[in-house]
Image (cartoon, rainbow over all chains, first blue to last red; front, side, top):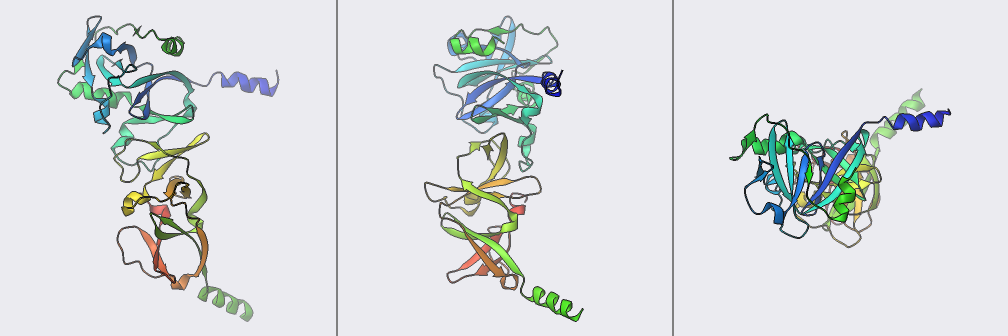
Length: 177
Length: 147
């Protein structure tokens, strides 16, 4: 085997992270796929402050508000993203779901050090996505809103199996991997 | 030996400072060339929700991203022109981009002794110099956003 071949082989062992890329306003955000439990259309979710899916409650988080952005709209592409980690569950409303991407961990760029304030706790890094950049959201920070919120849930019950109700072609391609 | 000493003395009395003079919102500013990483066309920035004053976006260059310092916002002006320029400032934490007017920056060499204290307090400077028109602040590019 040539050196070049070994190089390719070793590259395959680079840790990969998967992110669901969502859009709020004009920004793209990346959510770790380990955090994402499912997607619902607005028709399926309705306008409730706490979603109940398969017997599990997902209090709604205002991610746009937490980040100083507007509330996500109510268009045909609007989705509710169900999130859970370590027994904490929540759902966020996004304007659009762009798809699922696999990124080598080394390609998740750190937030430039000139960002010095609270936002350092919000983001895990920056992910090069298409011609732009998706902002990787920190799961712990994201779900801390659910822990603090009125409807926050924290229990150690069994995780909800992945449920992806969105059946559009784009999403099938994006989530199938 | 004596000749060398004279040479050093002459050098000390006429040390040149190399500046790049540019404008933001029509306001003329200067920066030491040693604090500049380059100038290119402005390609648009990607907003990042942030609490850091005047740093709330980035630009992407290939596989790299750089923070953007909103110098125009700090000076309470709006960047002029359709074909804006990007000035890259060198900083200890890495390069930082600044959007500047489309007016082409010019190089300016100045006797360092002519640099005076800047009396304004709207921006962190290393001083200013006076040309035929006005006082031109020399911004401390390496310290922008550090306050």
